[in-house]
Image (tube, rainbow, N blue to C red; front, side, top):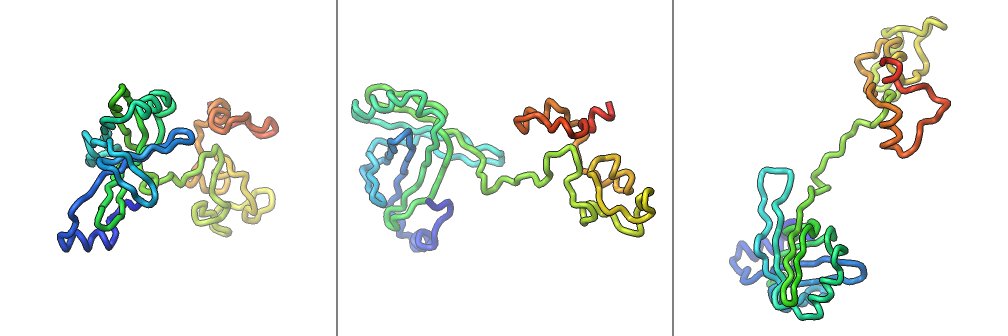
Length: 227
């Protein structure tokens, strides 16, 4: 399922030979995969039933969220209606994909990929609303680690401690060889401005995020030292 136009489709568009397209809607609940299109279509061995109407297609704007897509499944059989009704709450929240099929090229482009947020079904028609999600491929994951201690490797470029330039270990008179990575240690090594830890991390916050209590043999969080 491509998200961009292939060279084949671009060539057809340039030649003006793209005569017809169709929408394909696919979603899966449990062991059942539902496939619908405007007409009866077979694509890559899958049959799409001719019940789909796109009431409100994908709309893109300068926002971090796609506008919802609203579709209808008209003239469905009583059996299909009963199946969708039986899925009930299991259908809500399921992933759904809306594609455009270029019939001349027999290739598809993904128009919208989200989850079913609303559903209304009667004996002959089903109305679905698809809610969009951020595209994970475009999301930037923060690089900074969650920690009450320094996350840098001692003496790396981020730490910046330099033998002979920064303070020495008072116990030996020689440059520090290791670092416990807490704020006090950073200060002793002249690197306080490089400390990347989170001073506001509490025991309760650590337990909530990590799912277990800190090692009781470890020191108290820095936030408690500075309260």
